[in-house]
Length: 215
Image 1 (tube, rainbow, N blue to C red):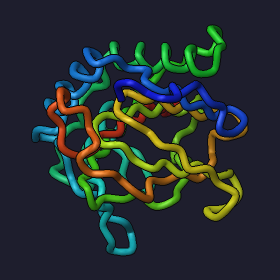
Image 2: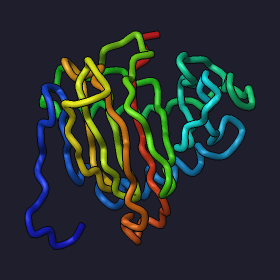
Image 3: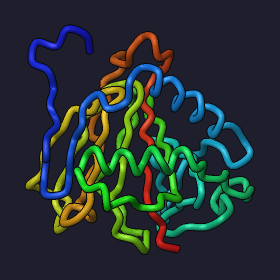
Image 4: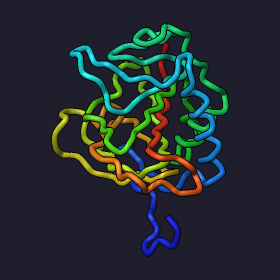
């Protein structure tokens, strides 16, 4: 946002969980958005995720590297069109490693990212409290935001309920969580429609989450 009265600062929300505002500049956001639009096209494109209980997630998703579906990974879109999952690009892995270095300040911690989960939220989409626990690696999770602002609820590893902290994530923001917060529950209770930077040309919110499979 232009002309911030109080500039947003890097914040450690919990041990090992760091919010870095405005980490992606306008050019980087545009490049990442263009890539997301290409990845969203079929085959193995954007899909609605169905839960084992018969429900559906309101945020739609596309995966790179490994295909996630509740609660497993596969090399094909096992719960969709059956196509091979799209490859995970090297440049996205380097972006993830840079994110970890900038957020956690540990140049020695450079995980080999090989999974991306890209979630698209329209104005009515939400994400319930959950843990990213289907990987065999405890490497930090990298989360990048594009488009509309959201409320990101970051909790604790023990329960879906309090204590938690609500963080406002805007377009270009980075959130990294690892260490004691790697398995913390988190979710998106609210998206604020119409808050995306106009120059980005995106209606809705994209969240690009990078993980290490350990596979």
